[in-house]
Length: 100
Image (cartoon, rainbow, N blue to C red; front, side):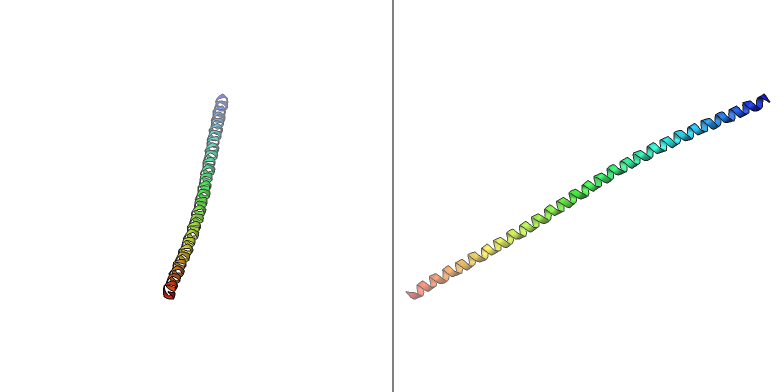
């Protein structure tokens, strides 16, 4: 009956080692999972930041475009006023020449 107990001891020992190995593997996978999730969150944060920057940059571009359009309108208006003034001056000069 001694050999039976020895075999049983060996089997128990193997089972213990197996449990220990499984636990190690589980811990390793958990660690890996945590690291991957951390990396994922970090990358997501970077993406969100890039999107925000892009949005801000588009907003600035749009504001600059609006400012440019406004400036062009103002220039056009001022050119129109200059032309009207020149026309008025010319007519005044012609009027003086004919009244002589």
